[in-house]
Length: 219
Image (tube, rainbow, N blue to C red):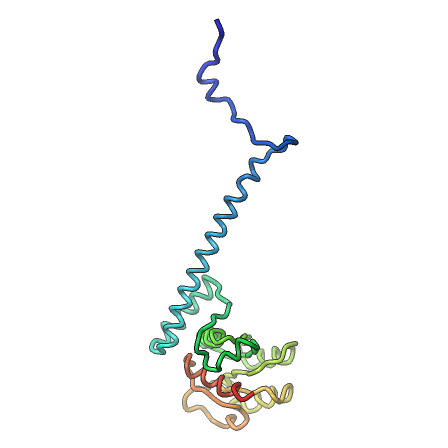
């Protein structure tokens, strides 16, 4: 009469560990493809969420009816999702030339929301954008940049000279780079003669894009 192992002992017997021909444990490696697949699905979901939120911002900016809502939503997207890529759009105001050359624009703006709306708008039209908190930081970036800027969008707020002296400083570094002033309504227009153009604040998508295209379209 043959003896059989108790069922309780059979249930407790460990399952064989998968090994290769050299006897190396491959149980951990077998889980890698599943982890990679889950990671790819998560990245795809985040990308779709980012695109959806960015499209909402684009609609706000194009309608130009809710500046506060658009800038608040854009700020939220930058902080949570981290969108820092350009979005191609048909019907660019400059005929798509910016997408071909990826021209670099320096934006000097003290207000956080104004910086966000400027960056979002210009990147949506295919430009590369560098941000500065004020004119002093912008001058430093302008001077040190290895790549030439195509345009400077300058907020002269807080400058005693209304931006006139600041524009001269930019011109002393690279005289051929145009300056677009962003000014508060009713601001002193003294510096306008030295600038290539000006735009009223708060910044809005359509006027900003048109002003940039008007200046760079002839260059």
